[in-house]
Amino acid sequence: MRLARAVEDGGADPMAQLSPFAAARPDEILLPAKPWFVLFTLVCGLVANTLPISGTASLLKPDFLALMLLYWCIQEPRLIGVGIAWCVGLLMDVTDATVFGQHALAYAVLAYAAEYFRRRVLRFPVWQQAAQVAVLLLACSALVLVIRVVGGAPTPRWTYAVGPLVGALLWPLITVVLQGPQRPRRPAER
Image (cartoon, rainbow, N blue to C red; front, side, top):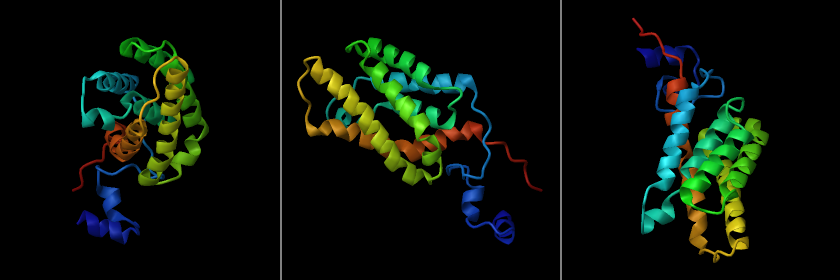
């Protein structure tokens, strides 16, 4: 019944209009994100980064905190920006026991790039956004790598670039999950 009504209304993709498991369309208005939810997702990203993982899983693990920061800088630039990214990066440096400031600098540059390219990224469907997110995450990882190498760490293998690519592949899933609380509640149809 709802599907037939959506087709009659001239909807181009009626399943996208009905599915809560799809990313928001460009014409869909989302509710503002609640600050506690943004903080919760950033804490989850920090915890996910610090989970002890070894073997192949450690090669595939993206920087979850950078992914969360990137999402919120694109979706809610008035709430999360370069200053918050810098502070979160310092917290990541302390948690990870790395050179103080390397994640802070990388996250601040990532937040600036996200704010700069925000309108461009939002024009595309989610699966095309993932390609742009891959470039931003690779740049963030490259900046961390340069700081580590300048600090005397050995150059990692080529697999260092796998994490940001996995993060880009997770972008559609992250987008759908984080947009869930922002979607307005639809009244039940009669």
